[in-house]
Image (cartoon, rainbow, N blue to C red):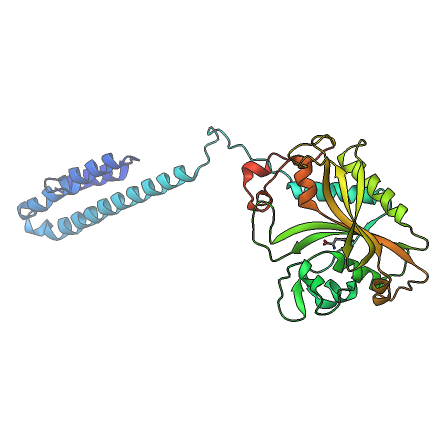
Length: 338
Ligand code: PHE
């Protein structure tokens, strides 16, 4: 009998498997109801009483050895399954990366910046949350004057609002620098308008300011002509129509010859041949004075345009909302001109 225990011990020791089915069969063969070790227990009574103690001891050792072996093999199997799962499969085909693209507003903004940088304008930036002084009062909007209603303002409190134009940045530049000043201020502006294809509660502007000695209206007109030719092509013409802004006198609206029909008349320009693209004018002496610049010594011009408007004309996109919806199908159609 002891002999049988020794044989089984050797078999158990030698057994090895990485298959759960084989391990289970092994368990049944040795520890199952009719298993060889279980059988040995039923033979216990046949063992001579002098050997019973030793036989019992060895049989118990064999039983626990076998159970431990089964537990160990099962553990090993589990570990192996885990590690094969996490192994990288280098045969799986790669997933292509989607290459991003630039937003059309950024593309046009950078083009405008480049055109003005080429003739010596620098770039200035300022806060989107502005005080009344920089957005209105310094710019010669009289208090309680209806001119403040021209730009439907989002007020945060009586004195603080979301800027309605980047002219506020130009006030800051004039307060901190003496002429000559040549600067453009690109940035986001906010107006309390119902969102539609033609209006939005925020949009982007580039405004320009030139202050020096002996600056004339003709200087402004030539600069704007240079800009429109660089932006829309050398054939482009401009015309200036009288207008009103509190901070410029005289003031004008700038039209470009229709970029679609080249002035012949089409439904984009409503058969007029012209498209409005910006406001401009000679800086009002009151504004210079408010910003501590002597209007008797210095003068200059200012202009301001909406980037969405320029993008609309360049790309023939007629719905303003598309620019802020972030639909990838729309956005990926634009590439910067090189
Ligand atoms: N600030 C004006 C606007 O937002 C544009 C403008 C700038 C007009 C400079 C004239 C001179 O509408």
